[in-house]
Image (cartoon, rainbow, N blue to C red; front, side, top):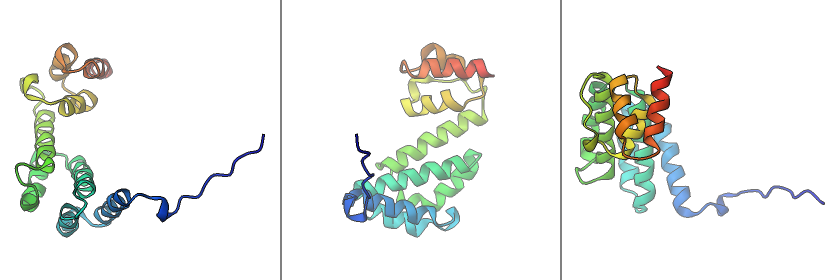
Length: 157
């Protein structure tokens, strides 16, 4: 049986929305987070709103992961608050990150699972070092995916 040659992927093969997303990701990754306001503005104002927003959320996730505390992440958010209106998905994701960072910095804070969405519970299940939080998630996490993750993480501590 002959071996098929791999097809070459060219820029013409990439759908326009994917090209837009990739362009904004490249722009956002190429600037320092202290100087990313213009690149974020360009992504969020792109006519292809879905691609621009997706790139902005990806950037927001990277920035949040780089900040070790809620305070430092909040400082970054303040520099960009004009870009994230309260009804935007970026604002929602920023709030999720702030909640997660607060819980990670305050491991004895009682965990109100009803107030935490699936994403936040899943992130806590993966990364928390708090036995009380992990026990609560293992016992009463929102989904079948979260409960065993929390139980496994608890076993690693």
